[in-house]
Image (cartoon, rainbow, N blue to C red; front, side, top):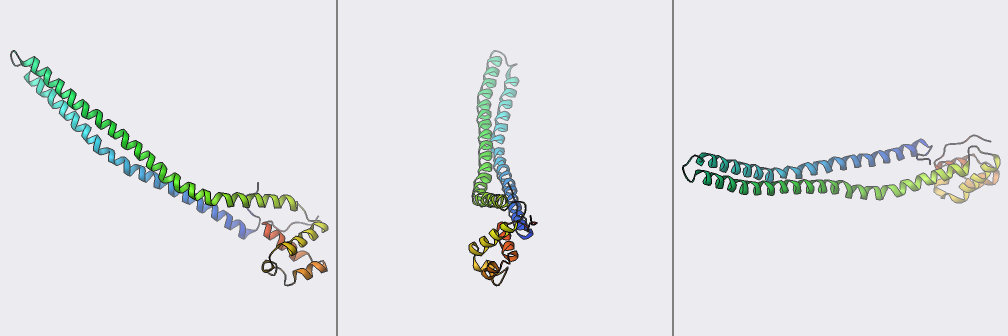
Length: 204
């Protein structure tokens, strides 16, 4: 598979197109990470709630420890306070942890979508033409072959004279049909090879 033409101008244009697409994809990757990180920062909210739940639980445990020494009801009251703190603080902590997980999942999803959707659009508009050009170039190189015989020069000249647009032909010769009739194939062969993206070839 030939990816790039032999003609310097066409080769440079093809390489530039590939590089631009790669740059766009890299920018989309960067943008996806930025979106992920920005959304992930929202996890600080449920995380702060979880910290508050931990503080509540520690406060009840401290209060329970403080009343443990009270005669008769101290131990019972202390256990009740610790249980209340564990129930309230633990539930808040579990809810906060679930919130952090949900925010992280949303951040990952939005980051992927930010990259994937534009990347699919870019590649779907670029790849078909790029693959078609590579196949066309590969087929042309295979058909033309490694060397030009006199018969092949004549065939290429005929293909150029009969197949290329007139405005393209006159960029190579002012009288393409006259050249063909007179057996002057050089300019017509150059036009055919340039159109195929191949460099001038040695004669066989």
